[in-house]
Length: 127
Image 1 (tube, one colour):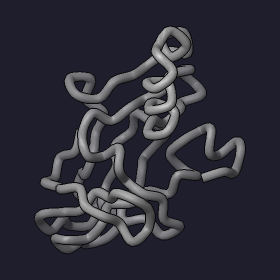
Image 2 (cartoon, rainbow, N blue to C red):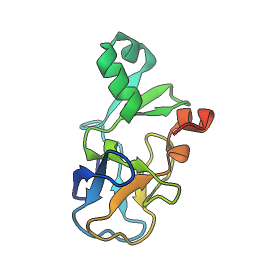
Image 3 (cartoon, rainbow, N blue to C red):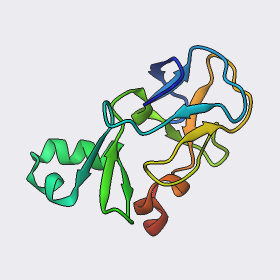
């Protein structure tokens, strides 16, 4: 669940992006898994879903290999785009806190390094 105010808009990186509505200080919490809004899916649950929903989870979700779970953000956070020098740092894969990598201004796009947040991306090297 995002802990900062955001909005979605067209991204110069890819499609839709998640943009800050207020400044954030370096190391401030930006996102934290919260089961009240974010959802974890087992592989069994994913296989039981309609194809369109499976595609949604695998497109916007993050796979956490140790638990065997896919995590899908229930808010604007699922629109963080990839950046090699991201605006957020994840303290782990899938269920860990994300913090601001530096002082961020209102209007900046929130990004993650997909290679550090998703076991599927780490394993395949594909973004």
